[in-house]
Image 1 (cartoon, rainbow, N blue to C red):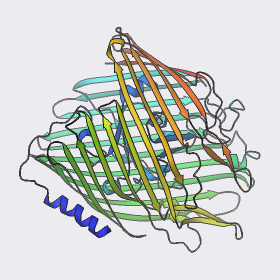
Image 2: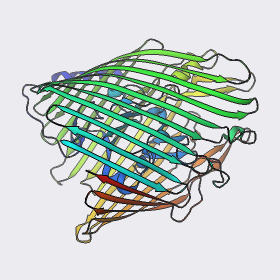
Image 3: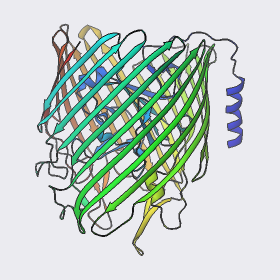
Image 4: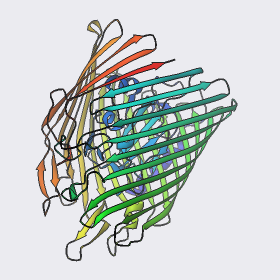
Length: 624
């Protein structure tokens, strides 16, 4: 069956009509996350949500995790306030199965336990839009994309000289500054974006008023572009994020020296992009590098400890795209070199653990509008690894606009995806284990009527999942592929409605998880069965904007690891209310106010860890 499916996809890619080419007119919202080339959001069968810079500013999101928590199918759990460890789940799958990008550069850290990106370090300053693709897209992006992709796109230079300066202050003595300066003419473009955020914070461990766990974030983004002629241009990108966080460790809370326990992180990404276009053909060559380093200092049973995590990703890609009448064909070639190490240092001498592997890949993708109403999307990818088994993934998608009811659209996607072991997992396998990638098979079916309502059903099955296993007899643990299948199944509903006469806009989304099961049939922790987000926005005729947001979290369980064996504890069933307001004080000067948890609800997203109480934040930004 698998070979027949692959043959069908290959035939579709090769036999689709490519006789004539024409210029493609893009819709107002363009995305690059579905096939690594710019295209209209309408020209993909994937489930994709775009969060714009306007939404981020209006709703006062300080971090990427705050922004994505408002999206159907995504849940976020913070172990404390700003800068504290953040777990996030897409359609029930953990964050190691979600690829996070910044302007196409990988942010997933191979030295983490599951290869996740650290969302707690990503602030929203200078973001143009966040593209979220839900569903398996390993057939385009390879590993760490079996549940989806989150691509963060920073702002781009406009013609001439432009810039902005923003100041913000709020509860817990949170203060920050951000700015950008850009220049663009017919040939040259250059941009500098920088931001600084610091907060005294509150206690990571509950109760929140026990003491303060502060956080500091410095980030900078540089861009340079040059257009040689109408066919050739080059872009250089640089991004660096440095953070310092005080934290509380639940495992050694009784012994920890809170004044000493802290963590630092330094993440740097570089990218060179060369673009060639001629008629309907385009080629993009990208060389990128990501350096990750995290240091954790803590006190415990064996005294002070220092744990150092380091990783490097080098990636080279060549994307060839051809626009033809009714569609686009893509051929992509990739090479990645990934390595990581972990050194846990205490009074007892130890050696670092480390691992490295390379990945070579080729993929083909084709989108074709069959008759003006029916879009067919097919992907096929092969990944070769030098340290574990190779993988083949594919996707076939269909979207149809129905004539009997204008604005009514249905779509369906079937996909396979995989997640390779992280460098950390490879360095710490269970005794006798030879790790291999986990493999996901899934599908989703959607129906939508304009912006009024959209319903999506999804169903994913994961085999050979990688998990940590501890032997209580030998007291030795490590990572291994777990026998059995984990299951994720649910429904997402979203909609929006505007009353122009009253200047009111309503939007809401609801997610219900039917299944989020481990291989043994038990439920995975920190996932809520039901999540509801609702928004109401009112726009006055004198450029004022008022908004209210409510988020309901239904039944949700976590684990109390302070007991042995760990026991189940309930953390769900609560509603949070937030208010936001913005107005133009004068030309080019804007004020934003955000009030969170206005009823001062006491709740926990991760058991034992504190959350934000009633709080208020203000931002003033001048643009020119």
